[in-house]
Image (cartoon, rainbow, N blue to C red; front, side, top):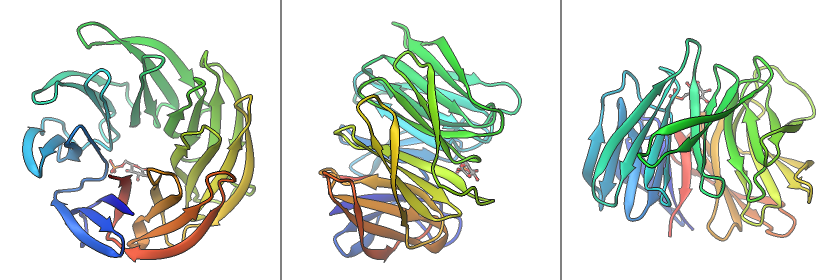
Length: 307
Ligand SMILES: O=C1O[C@H](COP(=O)(O)O)[C@@H](O)[C@H](O)[C@H]1O
């Protein structure tokens, strides 16, 4: 079991931590690496007013030109592009990365009220999804031969539900978790609305949906609920609709992110307000979780399993 934990460095945290079995150690000393990804031997992380890219712990690219730090970063190796969403200033940026060189391509500034929260590129449909929490909209784009974004469809959710993160299934179905209403909005491969599901049976005040993950067999979907600190497990049926299974206590406060191990036999939750990560064993057939232990990690906000 080996995973990295991105954090807020507002209090005691100093950057990204490595959890290797029982041992927790500082992996990279950084300012607020609240989201990051590791691919092709590079670490792509959020930084003050932009992004930083590291290779073997050495800084190889930095951009600090935005008025605030973004909240989400996504790298797609099929097109060699990096995408960021900047919640606080309502914009998203794109970069071209060719394995060594990085170039900023574009920044899109959204209308007043925008709080872009996530960018996801789906290589199969060649579609970029930009989730805008503030505008209750999912913007979609194609990418042209000059790596510029060409607007496609806009998915408008119910006003005030506040979409936060989504996943795209191999079927083309899109599952979007809302922060304020903690619901999952389901869209089919034509991006037509199908149905929505509450992540919890009761609507407690102050709950906010955070992360959403789909298993590689496409059969299990998990979401985290901050405030009612839990993970809800859904089965994904043949027709793409969902069936709620169980709700699991995350053994800590404010589960901002969680992730599956590479073989998907474990699930780790980052409990941001209780400074710990909770480790669960996972049955890959049934999707059931079994709590194993917690480990102390300060201000966890992003979990990523590594080889
Ligand atoms: O989910 C959330 O995310 C936003 C954006 O994150 P930030 O790291 O850019 O601040 C955050 O402000 C908000 O409180 C939270 O609910």
